[in-house]
Length: 95
Image (spheres, rainbow, N blue to C red):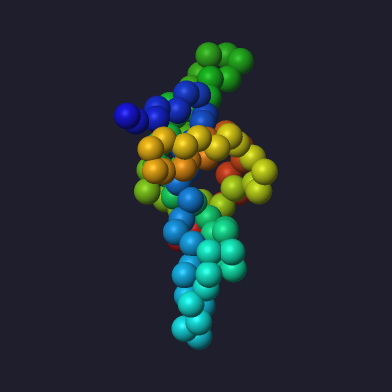
């Protein structure tokens, strides 16, 4: 089953949590920090303005992005957890 976002929505999958610090210390589940970025897994067609013109999306599948902390809706499908956000909630693309 796939998630196909509508309008200017973007489906994000959280990046894997770091299990080890840069100095090599293994972190337990509670000590692992939530990643500050997510990967784009699906993109809607874009937003339609008041004149009926389609405004294209600025992000693409595969990009890593930073989005507002409390934005979007969380969805769990199988073993995977996704967040669906509006494109306006995306703050930056990580390059």
